[in-house]
Length: 60
Image (cartoon, rainbow, N blue to C red; front, side, top):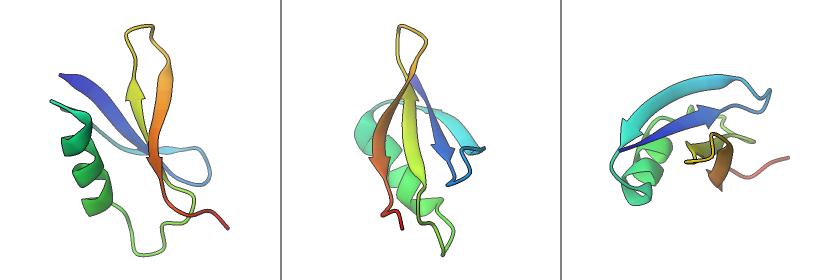
């Protein structure tokens, strides 16, 4: 399992979870976005300990 997190436009972590794969993570990301979600990002924690972006909402 990998660790995923949602970052808002202010670079704050708003949600995090552990999931089996990226497909499941993208579904989780889209279900947990607020109505006004411009600039939100989905990130995954890599084996190197770095956060990598997987998906993002449209930014302004």
